[in-house]
Length: 184
Picture 1 (cartoon, rainbow, N blue to C red):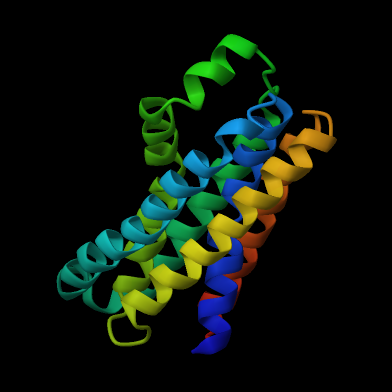
Picture 2 (cartoon, one colour; picture 1 turned 120 degrees about the vertical axis):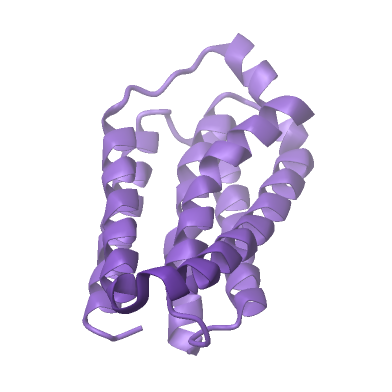
C-alpha cells in the first residue's frame, strides 16, 4: 500500500512539474505562494472526488473495473505525450493572466483532471487504498513538483517543458503497467 501511495503521488503529481516549469520560465516567481496554494488544494481535492465517483461506478462496471482503470491511466499517458509535442509559449501577457487567482483556478482545473480520473481509476477498486492517504500523497508530490518546477523554470529555458510532459507520460504508462500486473 505504501508503494502504491508513493508511486501514485510521484506519477500523478508530475504533471505539475511541466506547468510550474512554464510558470517559472515566464518569470512569475513573485506569485509562487499563490500558485502553491491553488495547486495544493486542487491536487488534494480532485482525487477524492474522482475516487468517490469511481467507487460508485465500480458497482456498475463490476469485473471490468481493473481493465478500465488501466485503460484510463494509459489515456492519461497519451494526453501527456500529446502535451509534450506542443510548443512552449513564453508570452508575458499570458503569464500575467495565468498567475491571477482566476487564471490559476482555471489552469489547475485542467491540470487536476488527471487527478480526478486517477482517483476514479483507483476508486474502481474500492478498499485497496485510503482515499485520504491517496489525496495527501498526490497533493504532497504535486506541491513539491510545483515548487521545484517554478524554481527550475526560473533557471532553465522553456524548451525543457516538453521533456517534463513526456516524462509524465512515461511515468503514467509505468503506473498503468504496474496496475495491470498487480504490482500496485
